[in-house]
Length: 205
Ligand SMILES: [Zn+2]
Image 1: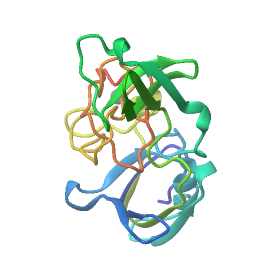
Image 2: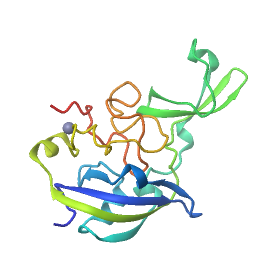
Image 3: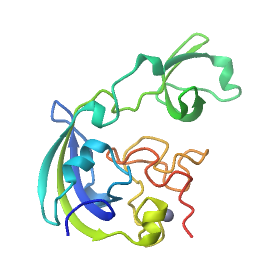
């Protein structure tokens, strides 16, 4: 079976930047599973995997517009320190907030006096992504997976490690749930698109 719409694909991958630095890798957390054609992963990677079968390896180059988008100055905003109330903001902190572009993960970039600079760009925005992938398996998706828009593993869509346990970014794959991380882990493999694990949360039943 080959990777196509309505298949569940598992891949191992290493992601590097233009300088060859490793940004993310499936490594010890095992293969990443996703539902092909359901926007679980960034478009450039999905296009690169289309048509591959288990055992295939490939290098996939993903430009920003097919990855996490171009870096946009419009997503930088200044807020007063007082907006944080009793919380003490620190550079590097990430949190969810409603913006004029919808719910986004914001990162605190800078704190100067009473002014806090927030950045709503994805940490990989503007970057060309170099993936080395190996397809581990391809199978037909179950009906429930198609209706939910994400793969199910042992323990539901939040079990088994497919839906997170990756590197640092808060928000997880179930970021449509207001609380950081939603029902899944608070972390998100770089290859997994934010919100990938089912808009509307993954209350699989
Ligand atoms: Zn589900």
